[in-house]
Length: 546
Ligand SMILES: Cc1cc2nc3c(=O)[nH]c(=O)nc-3n(C[C@H](O)[C@H](O)[C@H](O)COP(=O)(O)OP(=O)(O)OC[C@H]3O[C@@H](n4cnc5c(N)ncnc54)[C@H](O)[C@@H]3O)c2cc1C
Image 1 (cartoon, rainbow, N blue to C red):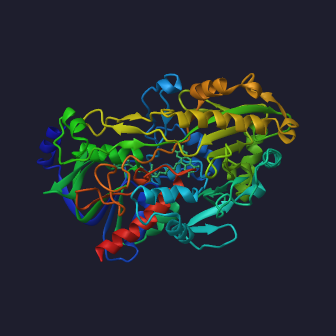
Image 2: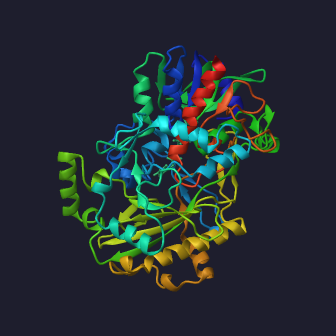
Image 3: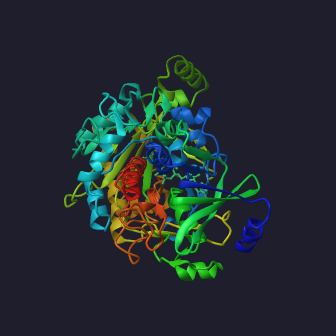
């Protein structure tokens, strides 16, 4: 809807105005945390606006349902990036949750804190107070681990006793290739391969909505509006004073007595700022949007993880024997129904971790995934499991240095923005892509894996040289769904969008709190760092309110 249309509709009788202390845009990983933390004391009224609908769906709750939801348009924004020359002209599919819980309701549930230097780098980039020592304590408060330690709302479970027996071959291969196999990759200073920890509780996905939003909604001072698509912010002078959202054909105006907090994720948060006149002035003018604040870094600095996967045929049974067969699925379904355990209760990412890809690395710089299943993903995003047993080895350079952008294509809030990851733009990233392939070649040729394999599905993988490995990466590497940094924290307008308290530079009453706030991408999966960031952000917001 254009600005003029909006003006006309706002003056019509369809308009209602209501006020809350805090308005949170997006009930995703960060938004759910904020809803809980900002409402606990009972002094503040909190409104959460979510464009999607209910998360009470079978395939959201059952951990293996990840593959079913991957491309479901009812739960998903289903973005596509611009075609990238560095990826052989491919336009990659970027799922993002559009449902209560946001991407934490459709993600693969791997729980990875990130490495200590990731957060020390945040602090060095101007996000003072986000160093590892500080954030480690926040993680400590947030988690309940399998041994019952922690006592926080986020369940971080060790499901290794239910993982496919084939997974033990990966750990044996890791040891033979010279990697450590710590008990838990989230332990201080751990590196090497181990069983992933997962956000699962009692055999069900434990999303940010389960951990934070549901308890918050029991309080009278929290209101959740679903199917509420936020269109743009409103201002009183320089201050963000509220916003408009569209719901079931009506436009509703809400006022924020204290603050508006954008937690709409790394694509939508910069899009909403730009639609509201906060962003690079030339971009806004090009789309006929009045410039409220020329903030050149809004939407810039995008970072994501790319991973390349190689699939192998196995001579021993893997998950394919269960998930790829009708009878296997019935058996697993019955077991799950009766016990909430077994193959359906465990995410498909089972073994992996962080390794060093070269001797000079300052720490682990490559994340590996070893899944006891092989499958194809169709161009439409449908996951098709192979009938024959197989497995997958995957390498993901942990700290890419390329940065891209998210930019609106028009002033219409329903238009998806242009997403340009700018993949493999630096020599460092191209070298890392090759080193990732080499690590997988070394793992594949270990006696432990060679003994249970009958070859890679990509012919000639074992003997590929550097050029061939880079070509493979360009042809097949894909996102592992970790867009970050598009409204990053930092020092000032020249290098960032917000300060270290997540306040948008020069716009009182407005913060951005979500994966877009990361100054740099963390080495691993981004859900745990996003929830941690929101936990600490809530402390800062409440501190400022006092
Ligand atoms: C398929 C997939 C698999 C993943 N696997 C893992 C994994 O295994 N482990 C891991 O750690 N991380 C994983 N991630 C990444 C992780 O889930 C995200 O980094 C994290 O959820 C981001 O949180 P967020 O709060 O920034 O955004 P989100 O959780 O995406 O929340 C944003 C919310 O805002 C809403 N919203 C957006 N725009 C508007 C608007 N205009 N009006 C109203 N509401 C709006 C959205 O609908 C959404 O609910 C995965 C992500 C995906 C998509």
